[in-house]
Image 1: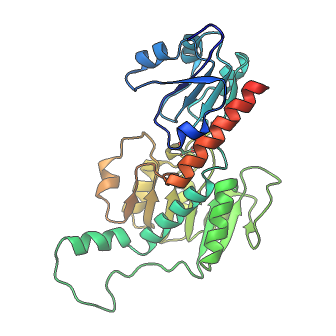
Image 2 (image 1 turned 180 degrees about the vertical axis):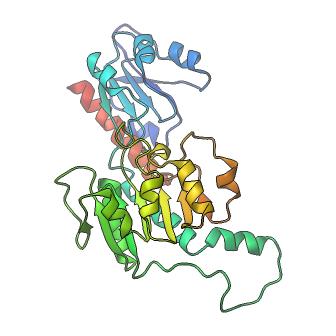
Length: 309
Ligand code: DGY
């Protein structure tokens, strides 16, 4: 690489990459490995494109050297990035925000339906080869139509979830994360968490992980949910206190939980895996071909724009 070439280090294989590269950047890919190998690979980069698996901290910024000008993340969340340390070093942080909202909203509704209608349990039952015949009271689940959905956080993803839930005939309640957030049509706003919990037959979380939202939904708030409620989390695992969730599932206060994210990813505790009324997916909320291509294009476009100033 010549002294004037600008290097973009990518930490993952990204769908849609060759079409989306900004002009004037020479791409290099870190093939994976331990933290030490990432710190070595990052040296001399002008731009970095990381995923939520690679924390961006002062060590990484130092290892990159003074030429690093922009960090792009292949995510909406920035909880893996020390944004303040980047700011102090004059490094801009850009995300794929917005590009993945429809995909995550679809996955959220999928989890909600799978949990309410016991689809995974029923699938396991059929696969077991058990004898069965139609019965009026087998696999009774909860109907979404006419029930109340509580949405915590009304950013791009929460808003897309609200629209879809309304189309299912749900009564949609929401507590926006930021004041002044516009409400999608028909959404009933709430000003406090306890009020939202008390009306949520189903609760879905769509707030970023910050010091304020870390373990925000704990035992006291989960206890405020109506008996038989279902909790869905496609945001960040640490927003929800997993032990409290397990306790309330075991006590029968909650009818089920559908999770795409976990407190200590990729570790999923055996109690969650064994529970018959949990539906668990491996952080695949945005995993559609279309969303991933759109995310690649969006974050690279933002990296290019940041470099252009
Ligand atoms: C996001 O965009 O934050 C997704 O959870 C992927 O990390």
